[in-house]
Image (cartoon, rainbow, N blue to C red; front, top):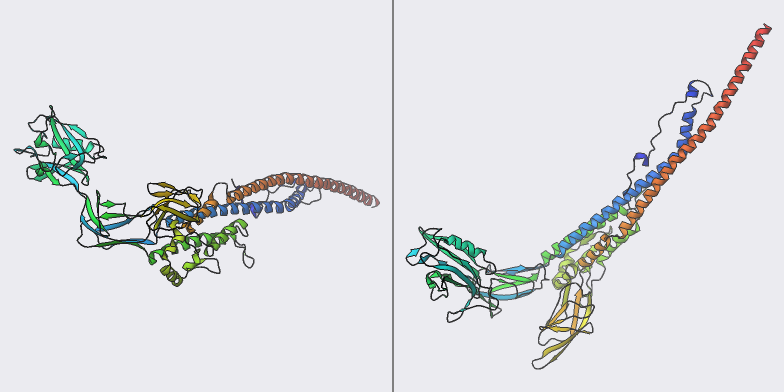
Length: 574
């Protein structure tokens, strides 16, 4: 821990004034020897003491400044992490019938598709309005079973066949039941249904008229999540008045039929048991909101305004951390003091790393490298970055996908018929050759080599198996040819790696701080030695001046004797 230094770093605190009793009694030379000794000691020791205290203060300032550099890099890394989640691609829909929602974990790519929505997915909903036609529920706490001997309600969730028979699906949840007694109310039944786990059912009591209530039961979305409810008495006989075994026999109790969403996707009819579509377009969720009679265009595209806003925020972050370090390492102008870390080679190396980003190539996004300067980012004379918006717009218009090299890691192929993606973090940035083998007519891909290593084929997906390509997935379409696979690390990603190296425990800054603290400990030891030396010097001067005072006192006595002798001699002559 750094030592706190008092104001003695620049001005030593004078010792308390000592009283010279010998001089006060006129017993010696008459000089204030104590004050003279103090002055001589201070003249010999204080310059050294002040210099050491100044060195301690400078080390403490350096330690504080290095701590500020670490704090700046912590903020820098955090803010870059936020920017890394931003995307220059924006999503859009031509109608409120569909909402396009980007996913935060998947790199978004441009796309355009046309859709029409015929039917939205709906939940199967049934209502029980009484224990029999002549016994409707007239209160919210009406007894569920009436005069029957029903003892349990059995619930299943599945689908109905064309002949209205019920079918449990392969992934249907296990049937469950609830107990019914002579006093069980429709509120009790609703509560027990809501307590069932795994069936996805919800129930409530709804007032349908002035004196009419219904027990309403709702399933999850889709045609395969329809409700089967069987009310059985002690002999397992079904009580038709309280059951729902299929839509035909109990049509009056079916409020909404459970159906799948039906829509066209680029002219192809598609059904899904949900209105939240996550498996059609990589990187987005399509939320179906209402039906439509005309085509709806959904898509994603690079947006110039979005891109320049992201780039401006990035440049601001770089300028902030660079300016702070530049001010700390400034040498001073016209005799000025300069910064607290003036001339520090370590911090200057960090500054130079940031200065180089405009001219450092970003590789493995395509055959030719991409530069930050391509997008109009320039280094000014003072080292700060600026953006030439005219140059940015010109380059972005022709090369919008190159913007990924600044903000997003990307795995891509050089052939539009080959889908390349990455999962995990084991693969390494680089450009790798991909070769395919196929057989049959139409051709079926039977093998693939990436980075000169055979890929593993699993369920139609080729998986990378070299040290450089673990986690790379390749899906070739008919007609695909040999190409290259590009694994690019973005500029932001590389800068985050740099900032993390600055912050990793045991880093160069921590080593410097440790060395400075050791220096301060050494300075403190020197101050203690000076204190001891000061007393030794004082004792020596005091001894020397005491000897002088003794001699002067003796001379004074001799002088007095001679004076008295002469005075007596003169008196004798008179």
